[in-house]
Length: 402
Ligand SMILES: Cc1ncc(COP(=O)(O)O)c(C=O)c1O
Image (cartoon, rainbow, N blue to C red; front, side):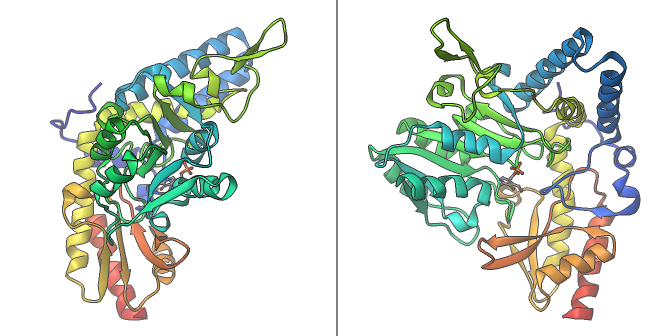
C-alpha cells in the first residue's frame, strides 16, 4: 500500500502507454467518465474468459468472485480509511446517496441541511428535494458565495436545532473543483449529533479521502471517474453504527433471512444492502484499477494533476475575456478547471474542441441551465504539453468564433 508515497518519480510516458486514448485525443473529461488502463481491460477480459471456461456459477468461479470482492473491500478500506465490512457495492454515486435518502425513516418535522441546491450536482440535490416534496421534510439550503463556499456558523446554528437530522455535502464540487470543508462540517455534525452524508464522486482517486477524519456516516462515489474503473460500479460507505439507521430500499436473497414464522430478518451490513447478484465484471475491473491507483499513490496523483491544472489556469488567466470559476488557491481546488469564453457559448466551445480531438465537457455552474461553462478535468495521464495545446486551441476558438 503506498497511497501516501509521493517520492517516486512517475514516468508519464509509461503511464500514457497504459491509456490508449492518449495516442489519439487530449482527454480531459475524467470528472465525467475516465478511461480505464489496459491492465483493467485485461482483468475484465480475464474474468469473462474464466467465467466462460469454468462456468460462471461453478465453485471455482464463485470462490474467485468471493476473493475479488474481499480484495476490493480491503483496497477501498485502505483508500478511505474504514473497515472492509463498511463497503457496499452499488451501481453509482446516485444509488449510494439514494440509500440514505430512502433508508431513513423521515418525519415531517425533520430538517436536512444542504448547500444552495442549484450549485450541487443533481445526484446530491434531487433525493433531498424529493423528500421535502413527498414527505414535507424541511430542506434548509445554505447560502453560498460564488465559489460554492458557505458560512460554517450558519450550518452550526441550524444543526443545533433539535429537528435537524442530516447534513449533506459534496466533498468536491463538480462544477468548479472547489474542495469543501468536509472535516469542519463533520466536526459540527458530530458535536450536534446530526447524521452526515458526503457525495465523494469528484474526490476519491484525486485527493485524499479519510472517512474517519471527515466524521461522516455515509459516503458515496463511483468507480468510473477518478478511479479509472469500469462503468456501472460504485461504492457506498456506511459507518457500521449508522447501518442500523437505514432500511434498505430493496429486499431479497442475501440481504435477509426468513424465520420459521415467515418473518424477515435483515442480515448484517454490507450484505443487508446487497440483495441479488452484483456487477462482478465491474468488481473485477475496479479491483484492477484500484491497484493501478494504489501503485501511483493518491498524493502523487494529486501533484501530477495540479501541475496540469495550474498550466491551464495560469495560461487561461493571460487571455482577455475569459472567466474562470472556482477558487484561485490551489489548496482549495482539484484539477477541475471551469471557465467560459465571454463571446463563445460553452456548448460551441466544447464541440469545437471535440472536433480538434480535445475532450472536455459543458457543465452547469448554476443548475437549471442558469449559467453554463466549459469544464476540463485532467488526470495523471495528461502531459503538461497537452495543457498548453488545450489553451492554444481556446485562443484559436476565441479568435475564430468570438
Ligand atoms: C458531484 C457528483 N455527484 C454525483 C454524480 C453522479 O455520479 P454517478 O453517475 O456515479 O451516480 C456526479 C457525476 O458527475 C458528480 O459529479
